[in-house]
Image 1 (tube, rainbow, N blue to C red):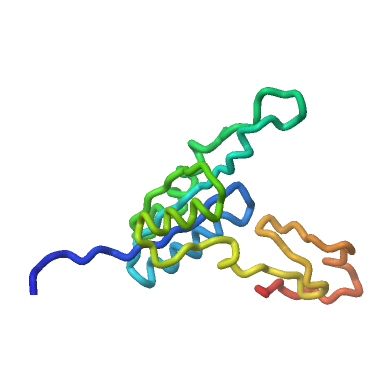
Image 2 (cartoon, one colour; image 1 turned 180 degrees about the vertical axis):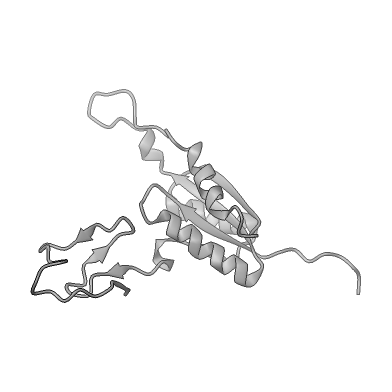
Length: 153
């Protein structure tokens, strides 16, 4: 046997502007810690963000904030012992994630589908990480509703 180092396996995690995106990265970090893998965080900017937002305008929303996005993602990784890099790519989301998976030889791609959805125990409405309750009837804390802790679906 030669003493050549073996290449670490890699995983890709999608980062976006949603409130749940940090949880995607945290889920990928846990996986990397368990499997001694390297993390590639990909912020995908859809091309239509560069188009005009209203008819007759010649400018679009653009990519404001894309510089801070990788910094935020890498801040989540700092201190976990996981080797990571963050990249910003422009393109259609599924295509970009697949290209990144192939380019890095990643075994997995983490997206919002890999994060359990926390639901209200009464109505099963979605509760987001900010504590916003997406239920047509506000009932949390009411007298007729038993208070129980939300749980993952």
